[in-house]
Image 1 (cartoon, helix red, strand yellow):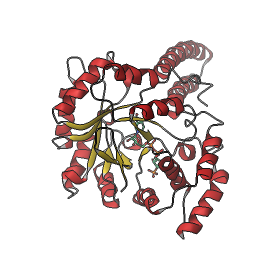
Image 2 (cartoon, helix red, strand yellow; image 1 turned 90 degrees about the horizontal axis):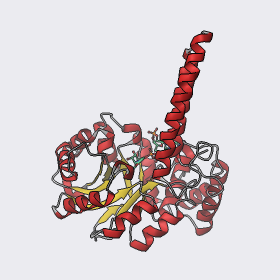
Image 3 (spheres, protein in one colour; image 1 turned 90 degrees about the vertical axis):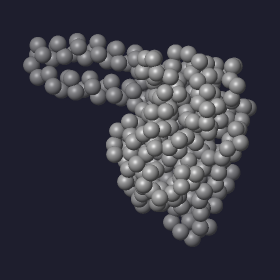
Image 4 (cartoon, protein in one colour; image 1 turned 60 degrees about the vertical axis):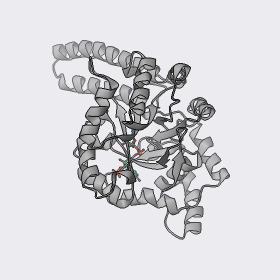
Length: 342
Ligand code: NDP
């Protein structure tokens, strides 16, 4: 597995297996064991996923030495009175390890004082509980806040990264590059799985697939082309699957040639014609789904009127919360509206 050198001198496997999204709050032990058998060593967890104990069970039973595995977890919103160190120690108990390789602040808006939180992150690194510390979902403004006082420069910022946010991510990625911060990406297959009607479609990827198939002498999938696009951009890619054959498909990119610069540009250019960020638009769509549910359950005229007035208030409140969250997450992103997040 190719490794990416981080600004703290450590190395991280360039392709990671995620235990969030489809695996959240699930017993993922056997799936993670399959991922490790397939060849994944970089395992991306988080306190928020509420399944660290299953990741821990897989780590303990996989038969691989601890040093062969690269374990990440992420700091969730802290309950009143709990320290960053206390939260990490709880994770370490669940994960059944003495240290994590990478510890990230998961979502900046969960923390009122980012500088104070980062000082605590520096403390757990100093104590040897986390080899590498970094960030996730930080925008440029929040990143600058950390950089103002940081003794340890964050090694990584893990953000949504795929062709439909490639253009909007450019400013942030330029800041990463200036400070030696590696970009880690999640939802890298979103053009295929979450926004399949966009311009980075089968027709666009077909000639690239055919060229790769000819060179590799083996079938190449669209997901593999997208993972190669991430590799071309130097992104540490966090993907996932529930299926052993798909895990193998992802890992098989290690045997595939690189995309040419013209192929990379084709995907960059097509992706840049639209802006679709899943982890913002999802907040909006949840609000509309709740509204439709309320309306369809109201059958009589009076009930319908009551439901509409409750629903309008409800959606107003939810949308405001969603937009506030979206704007706080991505204030530099001027498409943070329900209409904008297409
Ligand atoms: P991806 O975009 O890589 O999507 C992976 C999903 O794509 C799998 O569920 C897989 O389904 C599906 N898939 C792959 N190929 C195809 C295909 N050809 N047709 C249909 N479906 C396909 O990543 P995710 O968005 O799931 O995120 C990956 C990980 O990143 C998470 O588990 C988590 O660890 C991390 N993450 C971090 C976040 C953060 O805030 N820091 C936010 C979101 C994710 P199947 O199971 O069927 O193979």
